[in-house]
Image: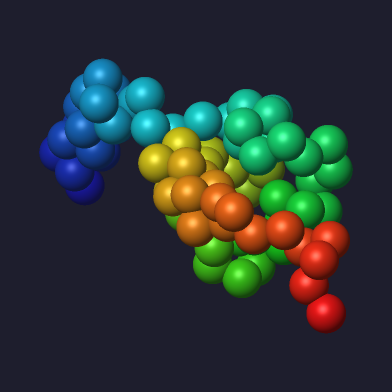
Length: 81
């Protein structure tokens, strides 16, 4: 088990993986959100990738947030309906 923990820690610390995971405040800033509820909605609906680091700490995939934003490009919700 210790060997697995060491390998996982090494993997998490590699620059390309470490750069993709961001904290809640950075995720909200990237999305232009001010509330935790909006971010929770995206998690609940599997629209962005996230991981639990601990019971109270969640990290978000910057790449998945950028993909989500690209998928919404050009949609004007004020004109729908």
